[in-house]
Amino acid sequence: MRIADIAPDGGIFGRNLLAVQHAAYAVEAKIIEDDRIPPLHETLEELCAERLTWLGAFDDDRLVGAVAWSETALMVDIDRLVVDPGAHRRGIGGALVREVMARAGERRIVVSTGRANMPARTLYERFGFGGAEDVEVIPGLWITRYAYPD
Image 1 (tube, rainbow, N blue to C red):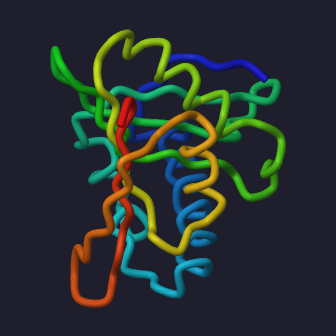
Image 2 (cartoon, helix red, strand yellow; image 1 turned 135 degrees about the vertical axis):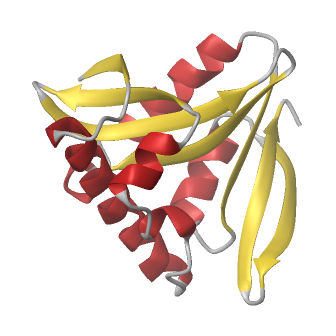
Image 3 (cartoon, rainbow, N blue to C red; image 1 turned 30 degrees about the horizontal axis):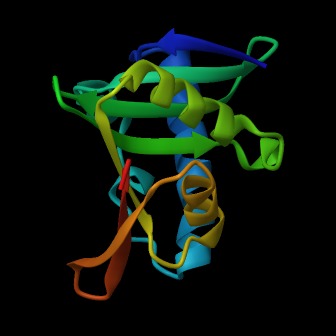
């Protein structure tokens, strides 16, 4: 697996990234029993308009995962972490989180995931994210917010 900087575009690469994102969030929607996750319904134009820094994970030349974040001088906010469902359980999500942590340096890192998404929660907790706080972002849709260090 190779991890590299990426940038969504309006072409084939952007469409591939969007397909991985939609597939990953469809899995989360099933886990949390709620499909109101905004990136699940994002269009290619909306994806490209997001002001995020991206890394992609590649198996040969095939995109199998991605992570995107926003950042300030003091904080990194992981906005999304997506792994192609056909590539689950291969360490891709963990490798992407490790790379963001390395790039964050001493800055605080925050991330949110569906409260019932135990695979994602376990991943972040394994990396030392803590300070879990449950928030109802829209009626009936709960997320858990984490921070590193907590």
